[in-house]
Image 1: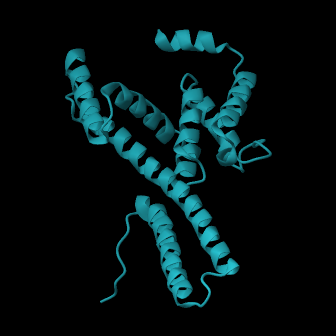
Image 2: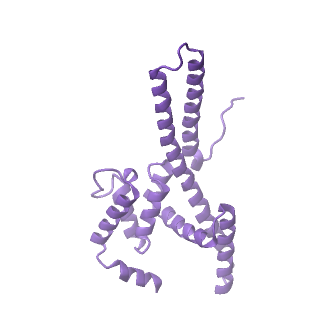
Image 3: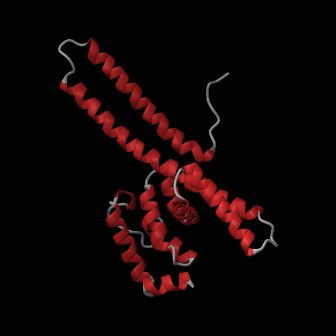
Length: 217
């Protein structure tokens, strides 16, 4: 029998990142063993390779962190959807609210965060999962959770087609008139938010205050 394991599709990216990380840790162990047996201690070339290995691992760890965040957001959003689906169609508003609060509290307990933080996370997770290009970028590790959250925040009060168009502008190279210059995933958070907000305001001139008031209403 072979040693290959069956990997679920959502886990493929994370497993690939972990395999690459493992290879770098094994390389480090081999380099350390080689340096221990060498006369005169580790040479400059060996130290440089150990340095490069750590930088490569940092990049992979960043990618893996984003991929795990995608899985967490997906499971959290789907947990709430399933809880709502289990609520009888004729349930009262009070019962529906209680069921949702119960789901939020359970998720808060599992993630060890406050119920308020869990509610905010669920809102962002559902928005991220509703934007295919954002979720895809997060799943591949090309966009961090912080970057995905910025796009979710800035599209929260837009209708769905407008939100998708904004996300695609920054993340889909095949979108009409895609963003040029540095890819969104390589921008620091403050710069990404500034660019996303500027594009949104140009294409949706109604003020953010009016949109917020509509959202509240």
